[in-house]
Length: 170
Image 1 (cartoon, helix red, strand yellow):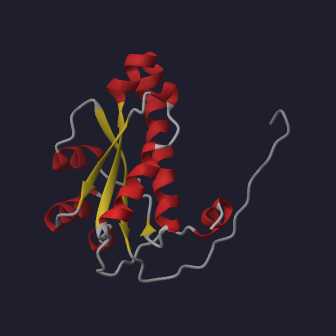
Image 2 (cartoon, helix red, strand yellow):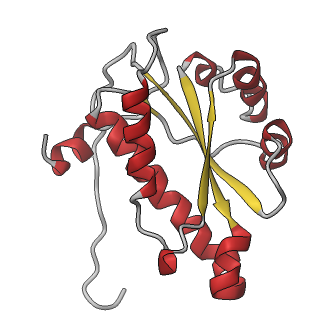
């Protein structure tokens, strides 16, 4: 499948069946995250794989009751490593570049999941401090997204899309 087809067919999945994901597919998701671009190649992003039912249940509470994440085979928590980015770029690294590093990895994970026949969803609505506490995340690392990943129970239709394009100046 070519990359534009993967981009166009990727959907946010909020309904999962109970099928397990084999280790080879998980490795491909992580490889996709690893190869995302990063500021100065500092790779200031980390991931946490959550498969335990109890921990997933706790993350439902931290994500304001988004129950569907608990049904996914796993949740990939993508984090920005502020200390690593700050070491190379100071304040701008700590407050922007590491977040950009994390988000490029998130997009790669979402696209790879789709290419592998998996469903996923980018979850940004969560209590950062609760997630930090549940997963024992150090202070210099910020959780940026929760990505539930599993086999989809649905086939959502594509939404309409638009893009505002401006030549040279707004």
